[in-house]
Image 1 (cartoon, rainbow, N blue to C red):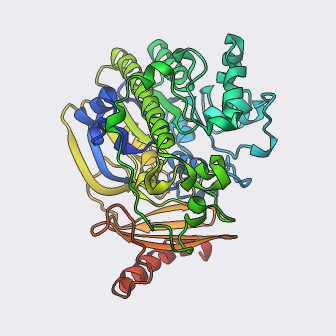
Image 2 (cartoon, rainbow, N blue to C red; image 1 turned 90 degrees about the vertical axis):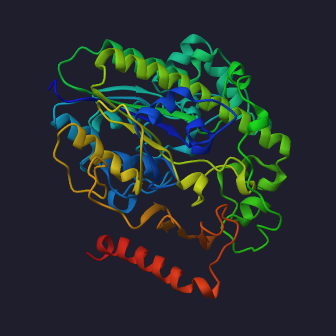
Image 3 (cartoon, helix red, strand yellow; image 1 turned 30 degrees about the horizontal axis):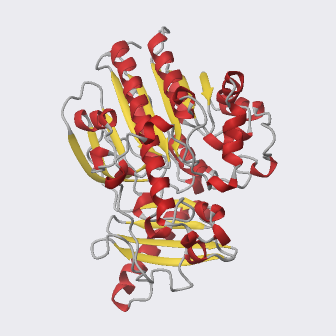
Length: 474
């Protein structure tokens, strides 16, 4: 067992990679995340398997696309089936001790049960997560979930005397999801997760090799960084807002109503906007949101440093670090925030950094990879047989992927890295969009009706059929 490396998988929720300094971000420095990039491998073309939390996380956990795992929605009753082979179970069978710190979200949250005046029990969810093969769990199942339901974090936050203030801020509609964390920085959800993970890794004494999934719920909204981190952001160097006058004039565009307001207004951010229209957010609001978001990433970077130091002290170079996100965040580009129904690069194209055991020199891998590759990559590192899945171990260099997909309830997207097609078909939510990233990297022009792109569109639709047909009519 001692010859197997420790594996530390670090994920952020809703992370726009362009905020990180190793991807060119200027508003903050992220030296600890940069260290993984500087000593490891940057996967420059990594895409999430879904723009929603639950299906994206279940794809990481199973190595399966959502249509193959059955976990395809944040909202329907489609919790991950306990009978499906997953990362925790495979690692346990291979002799690893499995631990999780932070967000799981492998089952839909009962959003309709939430109340502004109290925090509700959550033990049933915790028991379900443990049943998936987790040996040790310190649960903080999303910032808002920790306000709505008593997970491990909110129980401790309540005993410390800060839960009510946090709950009141989350439910305060005037804040529009942007406010400073109402307590000491060490009690912010992401600081709590980082502390719990670092302490556990430092004090781990079992013979079994350790797997730790450190799952930060930030910088996902609410945008709630502590005050001292807000001061560390250079507001003059925020990521540029990609906007163009007239972009949403066509009513058939997927996010037309989310921008202007209407029956199809469903992106996350429109719910807090006047008339449910993202166009009503002011430039001051966008700046305040982005400063808070960047500050949260800065806090997470400090915690990543803390975790890496603990693991290095414990294991030296005999540890594999993986850093990624479940999906990204629009962060004001195209006048939107959130990720619902998004195939934009801000949401779909995620960071993936891996520092393999003993690796010291930076490298880059430009293959088309996705979330399903994380399970086989972790099992390969532990010398554990790979189950049948949609992903491939990234350590193996002899394969290429021509296309990658993103899936969700009423949503399917495909890209070859240049051309991108997204198809939305869910009640009143309808849309078909085609983009050419070589000619239009900011994704303003929907080319769906352009004659010169007809063959490209037909090819991408063909790939969608080939992707789905084996599961539907096998």
